[in-house]
Length: 280
Image (cartoon, rainbow, N blue to C red; front, side):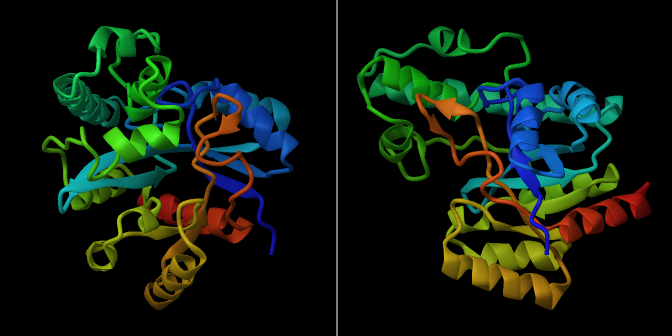
């Protein structure tokens, strides 16, 4: 079985460090056949990636990673073959980015309460544009530059990750609403990196609600977790996807993993495409 699709990558349109065309070039170098652009709550990077894909012979799957909150923590739902040019769909994403901006304000306020000399202005200078699509990795970069932490991992462990000193989570849409948002738009809804949530009951609940797929192959899923998710996918006829969650480089290291190292089989792409075609 060919494993030639990386179905989870980020670009400068959200919190990645590469232009969309660079992601496509890296996919070509890795010998991939297909690549999904799944930026956080935005579709801004898709047109450039599609143009590069046409030039380099790589299928670019229009995607998005929708932010939601379930049981007090961030839950991300990947949407594939979404209507990236549809104005009403784009408008829904604007609202999600506004909530992200609110979280950033609260998070930076908590860091300031901890005595860290960080400002919203200095974090936001790291990204051009006015769409407020700044994420925690940008804040982590500022913490590194300030000398508060040495690495991205340390920033999340001490301050930004679930249960850390500055972690905050303002009200957002629920994972169920994220699934419905994607499906109602004609896309395919897949639960991202379920191993990060440490909540199998929630994963089962979302499967029962109507997920189309589950991200089995992800750098943050353990091998034992992957076995469990494969079993659940088979039992519920879900698409088993995989992706690197590539965000570009932080220093000399790829974050989370190098593009093309965690992939999905061609069959997964075919199933995603077929589900989306039925919803058009």
